[in-house]
Image 1 (cartoon, rainbow, N blue to C red):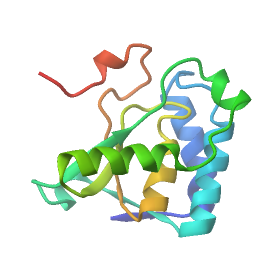
Image 2 (image 1 turned 90 degrees about the horizontal axis):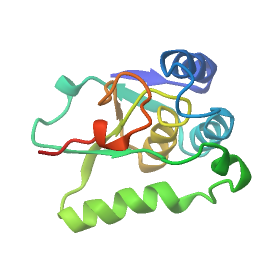
Image 3 (image 1 turned 90 degrees about the vertical axis):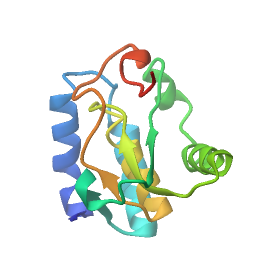
Length: 142
């Protein structure tokens, strides 16, 4: 596993913005969320899928909709971890990692904030390798 520290955060934001090709919105608010989470809970470990239990539960975290809304109504904090905990409770299994659903301004960064708060690694993977406006193209389902 690699450690992502506050010193690495600006490079991560730049990379997510570049690779997201403008998708996922302005990363400003999400960057602030990650910075606060890392200041409060510590750095985030970035894991490759092979470093985790193959039967472990990995949950994705994402925001959808107009990215300007999150700038107008900044999350209070527990929204994302609350959803992860609720789904884990429903499934009856604790997650071993968080995974971004896509590379993009906010959807790369918010999973980092969730992982920091929950003390979980983030998988160095996503379902799209870029941002996409259609969530159904990024979901894992059959």
